[in-house]
Image (cartoon, rainbow, N blue to C red):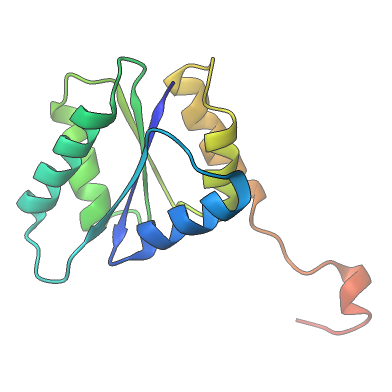
Length: 138
């Protein structure tokens, strides 16, 4: 089974896991890491590496981060380049993406799960439908 590691600024990742588990129930091989305000990027890389090492059973780790170009992304990307583990990184983690991925990660490749995460993240963003708006404009 592909493992999931959610990495964010502060406690966002922990909150995402808490919300996800309200919907899906407890999940194995899913961890959250939050960048602390006083933490150096090198320390975050070490924590991500330790988590990936602990999670990976050979099927790989999908690292889901909050913001492209920020420290959680940069640290995860560096691990992607350095690690001997099969790792992929996707940014813009949101609850629809996380729920979709934990429910469909068995029996698929890491590359396919990465694409599913990307698609689920995009499809999870919606505007209020016109049928609810009833003439109100943006």
